[in-house]
Image (cartoon, helix red, strand yellow):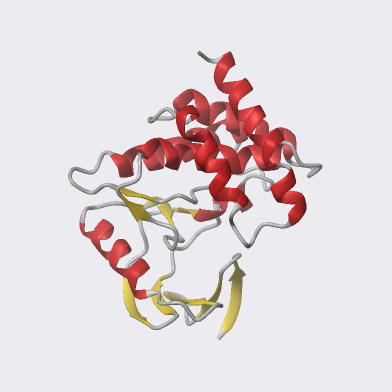
Length: 213
């Protein structure tokens, strides 16, 4: 197997050109994520097809294309359209009748740009039901804001993407921003520096949202 991706909680290995293995590093159960993805695929939402799930292993379709995160520095996607896309995908999810599923970690790294299917959403480990859609949007906004307030060279692009997201978001994020900040701060995968920057990130979301009110 070839390691092709490493997230905060899982490693992704290429099995062949059509399949990948997503393996939870903590040994957790991947079948819950598989059930969510299968149900959403049956409803026509753009997710990879699940092929097998057992224990910490999830075998699924390998969408062909770069992530939105990789497409941005390559110049294949501009920050503003990227922000609009990150706003549109959860809006489509929240509009599915009778679903009530939210992703809770939707950002450019979790969107694969395919030539045949368009954008495909990956990494559903954090998905929940019965959570307000606004929290989904608030978390996406906060994640972009974390990059925008960082010293990263692409911080300016993240700020532009965040502004576009807030202009096109389907569910109001500001009422849920405190909860989003609490959730991010409790994430054991964040560094101390990342947790410390959450205040500035939340303030940026509030400022940009207020400017568009």
